[in-house]
Amino acid sequence: MEIGFRWYGKEDTIPLQYIRQIPSVTGIVSAIYDIPAGDIWPAEKIRELRDSIERENLRLSVIESIPVHEDIKMGKPTRDRYIDNYRESIRNMGKAGIPYLCYNFMPVFDWTRSNLSMSLPDGSTTLSYDFGEVEKINLREQALDLPGWGTKYTKEEINRLLDTYAEIGEVQLWKNLEYFLKAVVPVAEESGVKMAIHPDDPPWSIFGLPRIITGAESLEKLVSIVDSPSNGVTFCTGSLGPNATMDLTASLESLLERKRVHFVHMRNIKRLDNGSFYETGHLSHTGDVDMYRIMKLLVDHHFEGVIRPDHGRNIWGETGKPGYGLYDRALGAMYLAGLKEAIEKGK
Ligand code: DNO
Image (cartoon, rainbow, N blue to C red; front, side):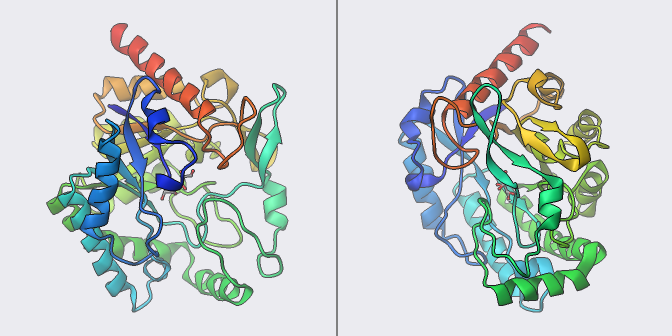
């Protein structure tokens, strides 16, 4: 198991040199951010990214993410062209020797929060999700721009997307995912790349858009669609944690037994009433995710993939990209390394 750290490329305010100084971190999780969704990632650009990381004595372990073009998710006739491009990007990743690819299949919006700076009693701030508040948002009336979405839409575009996805619904979205996986997983396998879908965050439908990667059953269903080690999951404890009905450890164990977990996002959340939640520090007792049990399963199953501390709070006056400051994520990495050492040596 390798401990990785997400880095947003040269634009990131956190330099690789700082990440290198976090004891235990050897892997970098990154992406190329200036390629439009749907275009091919050229081999040369991937190599450049890889080499810039290796020059700092780190390694590019995971691509998070190559975005899946909306036409693929919607099953439009144009999808085949974008799927071909995706396959080519995977081949190029393989040639550069990058082993893991994290992606998601969330319609239109990636992770969603209602507050980016909720105050905690210790004076830190964190990301939170108020279920009622998000329910009240009418996207047809109100423009929104939240982090993680990467794309801005006009009112007309949003309306068109909402209408199209309302027709698609969950059943068809699964079919579109299946079509995509059947086309790309064999190429990933040939290329030595392991794909790892990221669960929907939060794990339920928002703004009337269908969302399907929401819990234990959907993860099992996903890995069964194409029976290949290249068709796996990113087990994100903070995305799945808000699903109060899910037994995270049972699900992780089953997927580890099937050897389909390639990447783990370690993040803790605290559930509130009615589906609301906020993100806590990484330590188990601050939230609802038992990080010790997650790490124990990874160690016991000789997990060979990559884990990374996920979103941190803003502490020590740090400002910056929501969830992706240096300090709290570095504390998270150390906590995870400590858990790992204790479990390994306690055996
Ligand atoms: C949020 C991240 C997600 C993730 C994508 C993967 O912090 O975990 O944005 O990168 O969903 O495709």
